[in-house]
Length: 187
Image 1: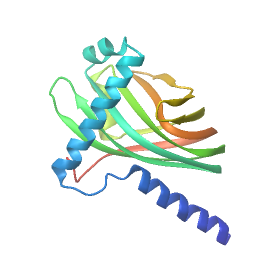
Image 2 (image 1 turned 135 degrees about the vertical axis):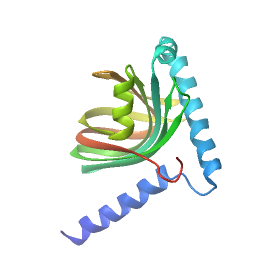
Image 3 (image 1 turned 60 degrees about the vertical axis):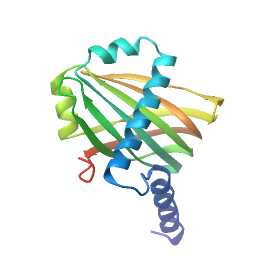
C-alpha cells in the first residue's frame, strides 16, 4: 500500500472518530446526551413524517442513531452511536455503529437513522447480533436549515428504516456493511 493510501486512511479514521465521538463525560452524561439526540431526531421525524408517530407507538421497539460518514473516491467509512428502546419493558440499550464500504463518491455527511422494529424477534436479533449489509446511493448538500438532501425509507423484513441528513455535502453510490453492537461502557 502506498504512503498516500496510508495517509488517506489515517486522516479518514481521525476525521470519523472526531465527528462521531461521544467526547468526555461520565456514563450518565453520555447516556443523557444520547437520549437528547434521540428525542431531537424523533421530533424531526414526526414533523416531517407525522404518520411515523403512530407507527413507533405501536411497535415493540425502535432505535435511533447519529452517524458521521466520509466517502473518499472509492472508500467509504462511518461511525456513530445510538440507543434501542424496548417499548414493552422500557429498557434502553446503548449501542455503537461502524460502517465501511466501497463505491464511487466524495463527501462528508452527518446523518440520522431511525429503525422501527415490528416484532420483538427483529429487535432482539438486532440488539444481540446487529449486522446489516446493503447498497447505498444518495446525494446531500445541507448546512443547518439550508440546502437539501434525498431522504430514505426502506423496509427490511420486520424493520422499517428512516434516514435523513443533518448536514454535509456528499454524492455517493456505495456497497457497504454496517455493524451495530452494544456499548459495554454505557449498558
